[in-house]
Length: 440
Image 1: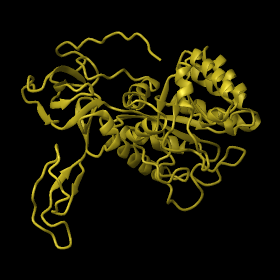
Image 2: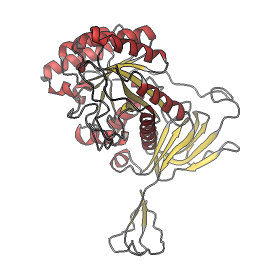
Image 3: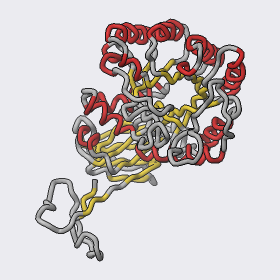
Image 4: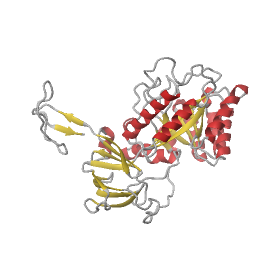
């Protein structure tokens, strides 16, 4: 799916970046097209891109040598679960266990939710995601406690990354759904919160959809619905209503769409595309409820013109106790299992994910936002295969670094391969004996 995009212009001196803005030179980086470049950042924008060695830092600015690194637009996370993240080993009921009336019997510990949500967001930031959208459950018995905890996490992350919560009630219809409707409106009034829902868990999925979209339209915010997408009648209703909503509509993970007959799924996909509804798939596994597995039919959706982004979903909770929250793994799985070219797979976690979140496009060109990820490697396919060492840039400054070092015993098997830095270190008892150190 493509659209004409207006080329942004570099900010004028002192504009957009602000007078006296910080600067950073990323030197000797390799781009996905094979060019070796210097990239100069001023404030939150890319000011200039030139051949390697051609640019110098602004006076007083810092320099980062990216020799051996591939420089990419930073990925974004369009479908996380902040309130349940890192809860797989927590005692008691799963954080998302909700009775049929939509209420919680177990009190919510807001401080614990904030601690786990912050740890999860920092983990995903370290992977490269400088923007995250996180689903957070609201319901009778717990109110907005979890949402308030995630909003505190968002404030604590200011300057490191952008976190946007999605308020997700389970029950919105009938008399029993009155409190859920009130909570959703209250949540969106807090500002910076997306209107969400889980129509699959409501006795009236169509009514649930109408309630969510009504709140989204009332407050001018996007809508993001967590659904398996296995009901073609409901999907048709969604497409009809979404076409009338000014803000964006996203659904996911839509694994159930793959279980429909291909002709039925194809017609549903065409309706979604015509209405501008985006789909977020979760290649790394199910989320939200244990037992939810499978991946949306991404090829069918893309062929119909649907914008398809990829998210991480569950991060080590009961639904996926081994979830990694790594966008590069999601891209790797799209390339290895769904037949995406490496560039298309990475686009699903970067350009497409940012578009779903309503964020501006990022290219490694002058005038674009300085939201970047440097990964040790020379080609995108290799980076998706083995992405250990990473440097993350948000708003023009380095906000996270991950460095991986592999060590081998000194033997004939440790060959002097290209791009591998060989250094000697003193032997350690019981450890590798003065072997080569390989940085990955």
